[in-house]
Length: 378
Image 1 (tube, one colour):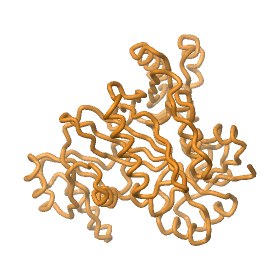
Image 2 (cartoon, one colour):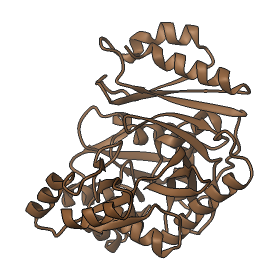
Image 3 (spheres, one colour):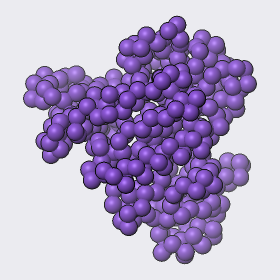
Image 4 (cartoon, one colour):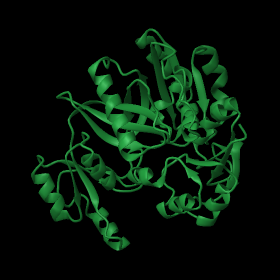
């Protein structure tokens, strides 16, 4: 195709775009933050994504810029667009992934279902919200939180005083997001891909299992999701993608409440942990679809290859040695499992890989995926 896609960020998401790019004959180049990152195979440059000159120099070597994360500053994104660089997703969409308060405001304007929320700038305002919501709530920093970071359960107006102090010292007139404590049955995720021309493709809604604020397992499709629930999840995700103009992959994290509603929790405008199962489990993986979308190519089918696919993250890894040291046991005992190694050094709490298993018996598939992942963890 003689087309070069530039990915800002050298993590595992960029790494998993590489095989899809190779298959499509697309030249992929990565701007990595440091040497030796997960996507080192395609690292064309190493530098700070917050450095204007570094990003501009990288963008000059590619046809399209996309992302492994949503943290590139808005001023740099808008400068790229002003200079004629194709940026997908663009800054007007990424704004809502970068700032949770703006995201809640926009989703509310679009009439989409979200938890009851408020912008709070001090403990008194937090106290008012708590008084109106049963004395408990969830407080989030507007920027920078992920995998459980920047999220706090509160039951007193002074439980977030340290965050309010930090915002006051920052001098940017910041605020926190406070939300009702949602009573939910489970967490779901709905992925959608959208081209600049407007074509969209959706996958089946999946169930995600969180441990210590980090995604641990994904079941695709979500059990007992046929019919109206699956239709509603897809409808919500498409409305979000169209409403904020996302191009590329979008993951909409959802709460299924105990009274049967679906509420939007978070948004991610890139390939997402909830879609890793699609590499083996879907006709078109989220990584190939992301490349198709940002290049405005026709999107691929999203049908499941197996009745069930289960992905289990390898978190932390072995206390001694590497993941590869465990291959002889893992691959011999679980030949149906697909193991993905992110090339990261093991560390407590760190996502260092994942395992996917597909099949027709959900209990058996869950067992195989968990058992395989357990080989790599002490």
